[in-house]
Amino acid sequence: MERIKNSMLSISKTLFVCLTLSLVSISISAQGSTWEIDPNHSNINFGVSYFKVGEIKGVFKKYKGNITQQKDDIASINITIQTASINTNQTDRDKHLKTKDFFDANKHPEIKFISTEIIKTANNEYTIKGNFTMTGITKPIVLKAVDNGSYVHPRFKTDNKFITVTGIIKREDFNVGTNYAPAKFALGNDVDLVAEIQLTKRK
Image (cartoon, rainbow, N blue to C red; front, side, top):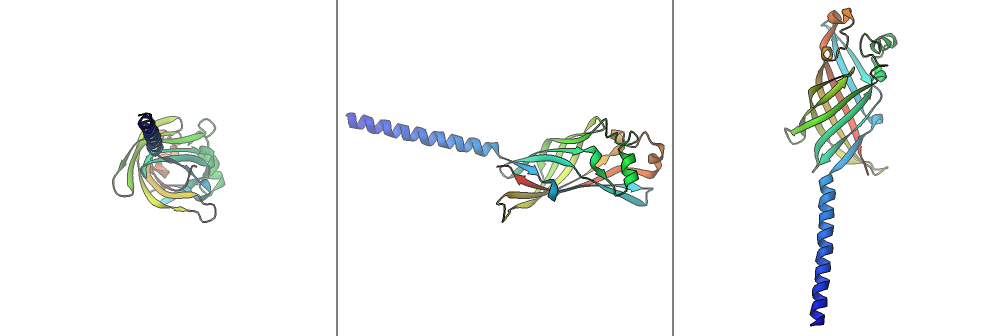
């Protein structure tokens, strides 16, 4: 009888351990994964029409952020850009863009996007709704994203992913250029955004 009792106790302990490990595994899986932006292999580009026949293009050089994934699907996006890192390949223009006439970079040093809802529209395509903050003004915007796939770096053994994010920002909604009269005639209101982002999975 004592042997049966010990046997049952052993089985109970084994079942308890297995159940605990299963719950831990489920918990880890539910947490998903976090991927950090690699700024050395990414580009945040923008373009705005110039006198309706040309286009001014530029980039932001300094930024950070991450995405989270659940079951291999993008679940959230968080990006912070340093306003003063704007670069349109013309020094005088860049200095002007940082002033109160446009971005007022000293007063508003960061541009931020935080997703609030992500809808998967195709196998690797997403509609991303979120709050966009620029010049101290926060408004909801909608972006598109494509997950281009992932790979393991042969040297560093890191998991890496490429995504492309596109959208249109209405500059006048954020008072960019509205304090500078010539901008009304020279610049379009729609600013095209194209961000080509590489991310590295956080260990």
